[in-house]
Image 1 (tube, protein in one colour):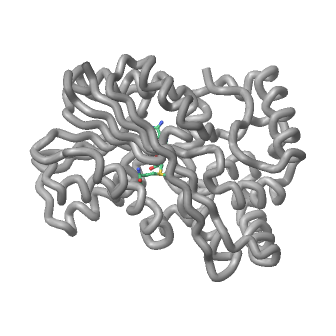
Image 2: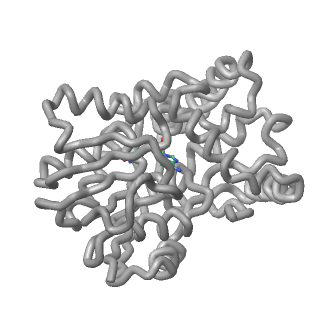
Length: 302
Ligand SMILES: C[S@@+](CC[C@H](N)C(=O)[O-])C[C@H]1O[C@@H](n2cnc3c(N)ncnc32)[C@H](O)[C@@H]1O
């Protein structure tokens, strides 16, 4: 079951507003339909709600590269069979290959993200033996038990409604002795953009829906790994602030990393107008900083 209450960092009035909406969403059933939530996420990363997702690499690769580097520094993938779950455009996957992984399987719920990953792989000259692409859901992986030596899942778990189910499923596809390395959204992740974004939402479309986003703290992530039966569990919190030239650029970054998936609630004919309105808010209110709050976690299978 997805968590009911919003656990991310946000000002008190907005937290009360969102959580009242979440409780109503739970009562009416909207916040209990995990498959519908995943479908909307998939649509967002397939570019259904805005074109920004096509600029994911251009506007946001600097952010995901930094996170991928910290996971890879602490995970040996040389001559290992690796899976990158929620691979997106393959930012981590290509680095793992450069670090000597023998084979990597990229899995993502979004066809568009996988297509972008595959195009990059062709440009980089990788063969089908080195890299493969699979449309799939972190909670139901299209692989047999004990297929991989290493599982990576980087900045995906925050968008998965049943996080324990996902970690248990990823443990299933690990070989005994294999390692899982994950990064996920901590409570303060993107807090300035979320605050500004929520303030610009047209409440009549959003109130009483649960936003499909579940940030976590280190203890919660540790518990997921422990409940999945993993050993040698370690976590780390990694936070920093990026400063942009203007608020419009923060909006552009935020939109390109999310595909504005929550816009599914807006009638299609007003999405572009709402996007412009929201961008102007970021610009004129000088939302020039964005915090990254990333939980890194590692474990091995007995
Ligand atoms: C913020 S991006 C991170 C992508 C990549 N890991 C990176 O570091 O650049 C989140 C990715 O997770 C994918 N995703 C979201 N929910 C998923 C799920 N349930 N199963 C698999 N992938 C999912 C999205 O399609 C998107 O590509």
